[in-house]
Image 1 (cartoon, rainbow, N blue to C red):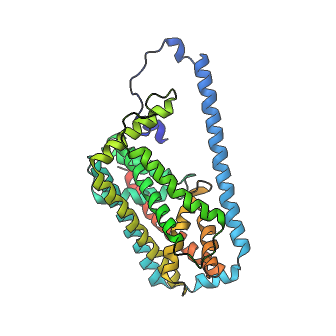
Image 2 (cartoon, one colour):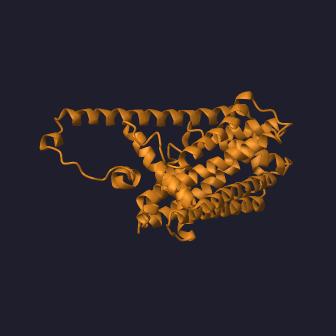
Image 3 (tube, rainbow, N blue to C red):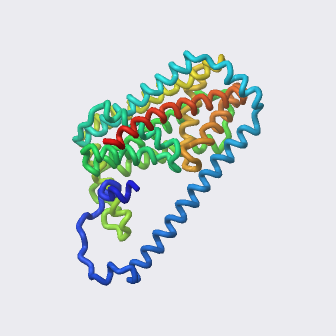
Length: 352
């Protein structure tokens, strides 16, 4: 729906000049149009198949997790949850959203765009609401970028600011996860998890070098493939904006690290509401890995993957599985609570 309503926002780096075609080419009988329709149908079918696969993976992981734990013990942990730490954890996650909006504002300032912090905070909450049920984690990013465009931002700024915001967040999580390996001596991780945690920051740094370095003599500029040409246009814009506002980008990265420590504190408070004795240091070490694994695009909104990673890693650190699942479910409950706030804000946004 968003792509149909706003093609210029979703594809801000494409050529906007309308080609003058012969009347015959506009007919549905023309071979070019038939080929295009077939391609669109196949792409739509592939998208539906991938969404169905993600839904299956999500349900499968949740069923497996519930099967492996003692449901009676799980309920006993949840029943003794203290409301005050839950409330404080929820408020801290809301503060985290404000910090994320501040990071987004800093990124927009580097692009010569101005938007009030209150407005961006509303969009962050709306993005959380949309991410609850979108088949991909970036669904909420697409919505908030679209709404930012509707508020007057340039199409290129709306798209690139959301991309940079997501990239800085993932990069901060990847680096925190890598740093956690040096302190997790007493925690057993599988070799594949070790390799993934080491590889992902390398990928992030490589992508950053490609996106933000000088645009001269780019190998993508004269490519025969149109998508590489669009990528070069995006890369050129990002590189220019990075060099023009390098200090702002660095500030945005440190805000990313800060907001994740706020989130770690919030989730630690959830564990304290269940009278869990696991120290804060274990949460600081393992949660970046949980976040990193939950970014894998294999489930709906990271559900199932997040809970499974939490139970596996924290049980390896000495927390029993029922307690680990209880904490992760409370975390999910607070995410849903933030999403409900975003849903209410989205209704008001829609009526404007």
